[in-house]
Length: 154
Image (cartoon, rainbow, N blue to C red; front, top):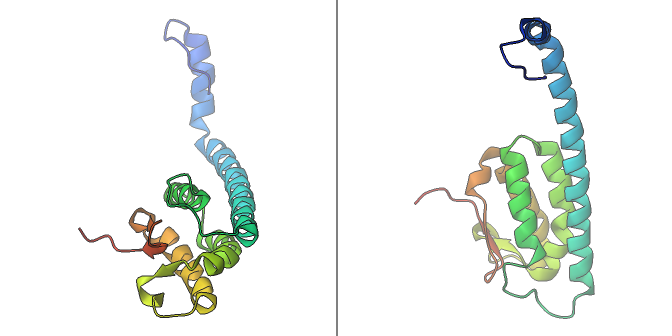
């Protein structure tokens, strides 16, 4: 929508007629939002696959640094979900791609602490997908302990 100065009433009236047709604008917004969601899903899925592949090639555990790709990926997933660009089904697909990396790194949650890495990886991924879509602001990854926490209480 082009913004105009009120000194030009003809342009203002022309733009007003565009604003008057909000259903069309809304449909365009929904289409753009769908395109953004598709792009976000694709990019997150690629990043998740790269993370898991990099962990398969690694010879040592990940460095305890904020530069760890999982930390950044989780932050981006959280923001994408919070903004409505990552729904439950897309979160499941992306998190499932993280399972091999979770298994290799031994990523856990409080509920999977006593489980084997192989058994806990898929469960951690599904818990992450659920929390990303229910309460993304409560997702916290502790890099040093390689654990996800999903508690919002202070």
